[in-house]
Length: 218
Image 1 (tube, one colour):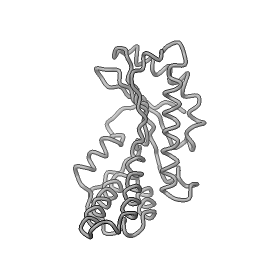
Image 2: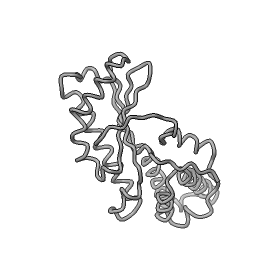
Image 3: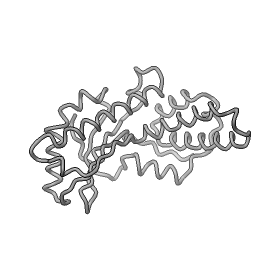
Image 4: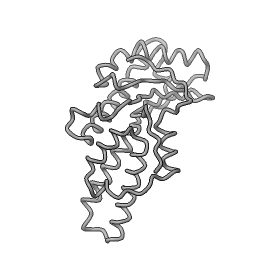
């Protein structure tokens, strides 16, 4: 079985595209604005802030910026919500609120004008992928009487494949709690993780060992 347990998982990010050049001075400007105008409220927005880290990433060649929230352990963050699913939902609510705060405050000061920001997106990270599994399970349960046995089995196997891929990269205790929360129909007799999909999940949502990322204190 493929296992690539990740210490830091991307649970959300705020995407901003700026209408100025990709230069070191502009990168420093964005970081300065975030620290002075946005980050002061991060500790109020992100519950269990000790479990989160923030980084700012830039796409070379353009000033597309991602302010990323990294989670260090889901199960600690969701312990007070009663279920893994409820905890995932609350984490998603937190990161969306954080993104709204970033977008609203980024042009509050003199350094960045509203016309400098030409596109924004709120992204939910790996927690969004986990929530999609719950949505698919709910949809299958609702429509089970409207599907043929073959259609039901195809959808069931696709859900179980996604579960297997996610468990392959989640820290051990997160994966265990996730499986226990799903119930036997969706957590037993899982297929092996898909090598290609697991690699995608690692690259899209994980902090790779050779990456050097500067975290910003919150």
